[in-house]
Amino acid sequence: MATATQEPTIRDQVSAEEWAIRVDLAAAYRLVALYGWDDLIFTHLSARVPGPDHHFLINPYHLMFEEITASSLVKIDPAGKPVLAPAMVNAAGFVIHSAVHMARDDAKAVLHLHTPYGQAVSAMDFGLLPHTQTAMIAAHELAYHDYEGIATDMEERERLVADLGAKTVMLLRNHGTLTVGETVGHAFLRMYFLERACEAQVHMLSAGREHLNTPPQGTPEKVAVQTHPSITRAGADMLAWPALLRKLDRIDPSFRE
Image (cartoon, rainbow, N blue to C red; front, side, top):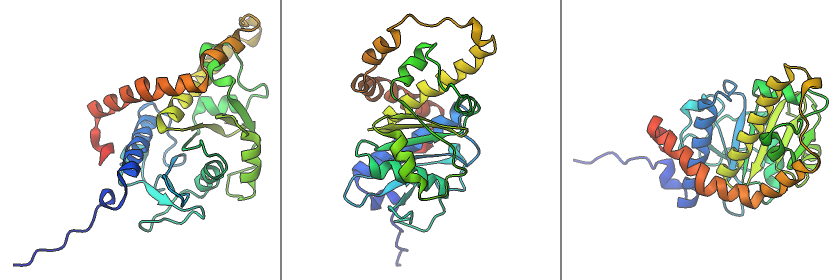
């Protein structure tokens, strides 16, 4: 008796290297949901697929972040077209993420959020204040980009990339937060510091800006040296990210599917 031919899975159709990146990116989606940083289905995280085609992975538009798995991520080309199977992705997500991925060789992962704290600080004319340790960690890599409306204008990509420059952390004015990393884990750790800094700033400003203690002169510069990207990447890839993956495996390992 003949048996039905089994359809190849996504894992069967991609390289081992791509699958590992899919697992990390799915984990990042789950962690964003776990920390309450998601915005229904309306923000996006992406990771570049190794190879000459400039493909990258992003979420399918219809799934909540706690539903994302390694297999459900959509691989798209530089024109925003799905590669493996038909799927719908967020147009604004494509504009923002494709801009950074195509402009920066080191932008292997790009995370973008709309948290209340990130939006609040992005709307403050003075931006992120260097009054907490986490703010000082984030601030020396920080850039700003003015709001131009929902990011569906392809021409905005050039301006966003110009504003980001060589930085790896960005406040999108009146919009939200963005981080770049050579790994998903590194981009996530940068986002963690940025979001914690924004949350702390909103809380500390509730006491009034006139009551804030300003760090001694030279302290932010010292912290910048202490948290050089090479140091934070090592801390992310060897310590923080493996710990976060273990945390997810204890809660729900289905992100790996």
